Length: 257
Ligand code: ACM
Picture 1 (cartoon, rainbow, N blue to C red):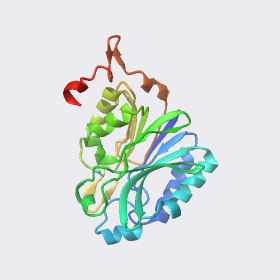
Picture 2 (picture 1 turned 90 degrees about the horizontal axis):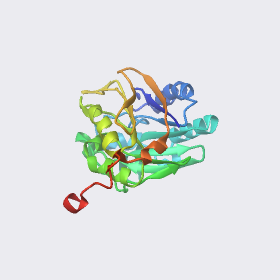
Picture 3 (picture 1 turned 90 degrees about the vertical axis):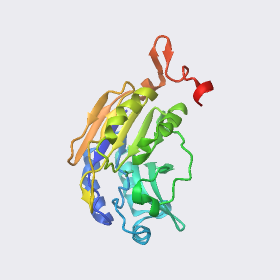
């Protein structure tokens, strides 16, 4: 599996500029099997009000952004996981979608909203679930979900081999926990962060891809960058820590379920 993480700065509220930027970046990443883009990649992050957000978000079924990505998937035969400001009826969700050349295959809605997101988006109302793409078992989380080990664990227990994690990280230490989540769950993780600033917020870049031993396969700096790595996702099926210790079977769920 060739995995690419695309770190860039979406131009707030300017979908055409975002698409223009991604035109070049996705062409550069054309040899990947799966690409991961940051959180809210179709709009930018810092909405002033729900009304502003409502005007800028799209429905999955009629999205110019998704149509653009789908055309790239058709052209290059890759799949894309991207953060997506999603409108459904009168509700907004901070979502992550996974699509390939046939269209959208999975949707996840951020469960743990960060700061002012609570006045813009609804908390996710879909379960954490694992889906399959080209025989790899995938799960998705969005940004501040990183704080909640239960979310990573639940995906790993369902068999996720690779967790795709579109992000707009601002806290300076968030990336430091990703290797540990990989290690304790024995899964691959791809955190695609953004760069740049919006209003009072600075996004921290340093997108990261980690393996089942908690090793860093690739880490970005704080500029526009594409990370590309190749690995065997099936390594995530091995949960042995030592010949006598299995990361999942040794859990004392009788004590701490
Ligand atoms: C975040 O959840 N965007 C920090």
